[in-house]
Length: 123
Image 1 (spheres, rainbow, N blue to C red):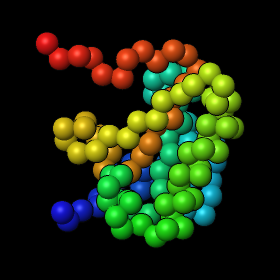
Image 2: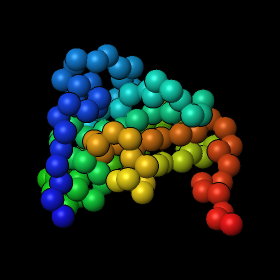
Image 3: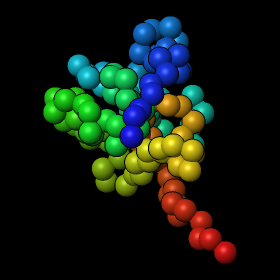
Image 4: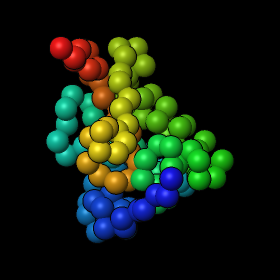
């Protein structure tokens, strides 16, 4: 599959400094910041700095250094936000059926309360 990255998406603009953010963590390859419409008491978005559309695009085309940095950054956010003991959820949506709203890979780290079931059962 060919991936087409839109460099005008909101996360690309954040990475270029065109839109401010509440940074939680920044590394060589990753940026983590607070969601402006949090769905839980703790809601942090973690994005790679490279132009990747979704998770499979990232893991198939990113360098080993980018992949390790991104995954370690997710762990550092969980630790920094104090979510290890109480639990948390990590969500990454991909494509139309996955209801991906921004065409730049992003992981939602949510916690701070009981989050309920991940999906409602069909039927």
